[in-house]
Image (cartoon, rainbow, N blue to C red):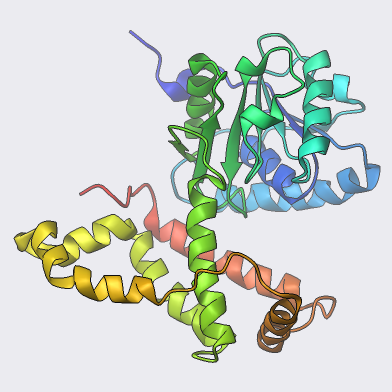
Amino acid sequence: MMPRVRDLPPPRVAVVGAGDIGRGWAALASAAGWTVSLYDPSTAAIAEAEGEIRHRVARLRRLTRRGAPTDTPAGEVREGRSLLHAVGDADWIIEAAPEELGLKQRLLEQIEQVARRSAVITSSASGLHASALSARLRAPERLLVAHPLNPVDLLPVVEVVPGPATASECVEDVRTWLLRLGRVPIVLRREVPGNAIGRIAAAVWRECIQLVLDDVVDVADLDRLVALGPALGWASGGPHLTYHLGAGEEGLPVFLGSLIGTFEQWWAGLATWDRLSGEEQARLVRLVEQAYGHAGEGRVAELRAARDARLLRLLDAAGDDDPVRA
């Protein structure tokens, strides 16, 4: 009889990078009772991360949702004194460095030199692919992208994007570990620019920007419109299920037959630009700051805390529900 996923021994985890993404990964693993080694060349970043990780772990363990452990103590988060000390005995090494290809390639090369041969390495890159990130690696088969959303410790979906050389066993290991952390791993069948989440976000945000720049609606109302309209609906079903349900018993072919012309008219009028001019960027920044305040005024922390509190309530209410299952 095969052991249940949660009965398997936890992997030894190392997180390389103590920024916001790295802190989220470390909090997830610690909240699950796993020991984590955290490394960053900046001692200041490590010092700042300690209290933030403790806060996130406590927050996670209060959640009554998938993967929120209640019967095991939080795992220790240890500071790696060096890259070797952090990753030398790890089973799963999570790279969470800034999104810059050359920097990540050099770091992954350094990780490979000191990691165990059996270790699996994931990059948290949002738009870079394993095929490019592994350019300097001797064993590209053990690298893949595991792209989380931010806040990493709250939003459950993680895009798992193997490269052409990634071993299927490594993909399955990462899927298993993510499931044990209460994540929802979605494996993409191939690499595409921006992955799936980035492409959807870019398309939606472009139209949102255009509506604001065209003075159709102001920034705050646009955000309310999305958050309390399609985003809320999609949170309970996703776009395809939403329209499948909208079609009712007549079925999607009938629905498309009657409404496809309307959608085609809308699609023809959507924004198609692929860059914002300096003037447009300045105007967008001004409009956003009018709605939410200027950076440096102390409001970002306040707005983030309020956003996270709302997100926690939504996650707590959703529990273990799969939004595309009956």
